[in-house]
Length: 202
Image (cartoon, rainbow, N blue to C red):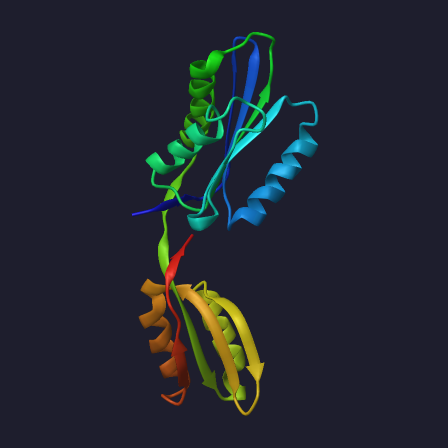
């Protein structure tokens, strides 16, 4: 089973006068991760390095940002993998203190930056999600919107044609409950259009 994080967590410590500030946070993919890294550079313009690792399926990345190759991003990525995380960004901000740590010391420091932040984080299981499409009469639109909100379903698209057509995304383990309520509210007259492929979500 894979996990993500319920919220961001931080770490902050000093090794041989070098300060390491860590951040781990759930993200939706590389674009969001790069935006966060850019924002961190703006918050820490005088940092020596901002190294990061992203574990997000085919969008995974390991960035050393000027540190010797393989001493920062890769060790951080391995920590995320070891904890079966998915959709998680780890960032380590380093302020150099003037004392070289050596390759082994850097690997340990960047590993510890992520490990210490993870110790403060809450891991939550990823759940399968499905995309459903159905049609109901116009008079039921408000009831369907409220039902989707109650079950935490995301409205992907709502079209107003002969009927109101909903395309929604929700956790797979809530599909049966949603279908039951839609059937009850519509008195069995809802028209189900399709069920899309599923993957994992937070």
